[in-house]
Image (cartoon, rainbow, N blue to C red; front, side, top):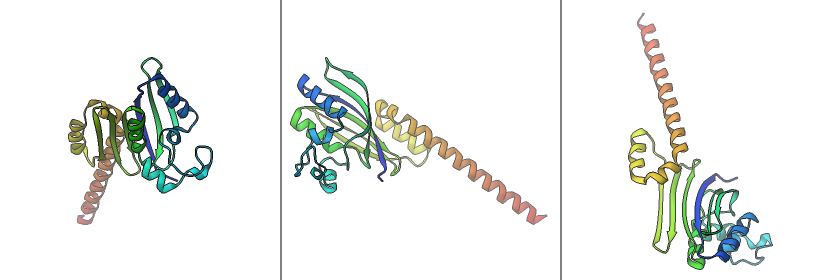
Length: 191
């Protein structure tokens, strides 16, 4: 069972044909196999058309997208906005192949709380941005990180930041309790 990587992607297609092909492949749960085929025997319809090492090498993740939620689509602008899960890591290889073969532009953000990393991957005709960060370990690191990553990226991570801050507060409360108990034990020993 993998750790799940949570993904957000804004995808812009260059034409109506590419847009509808992509949209339908996502709905039919064959997005990666259609737009970034692994080139193995068996093709789209046969499970033998999949191999762990090949998928990780090409897609940069193990399986096709799961738990897909398309929450916005524009049939005139040929854009899709969605959230989905992948196994362990984001599908940056799929985005890159979609750009190279089909001219599809992608802006994506992701986080993987099990391994404590997050990032963004953006690819368009203007170039490629591939940034990955480790989760901050305290409030000071978080403040500095938030200044570095920019507002859109920071907005995407808001829920994770809130959860981290809650965890840090709980740890502080536990440490304070431990210190109080130690102090109380010392006082009792002195008496």
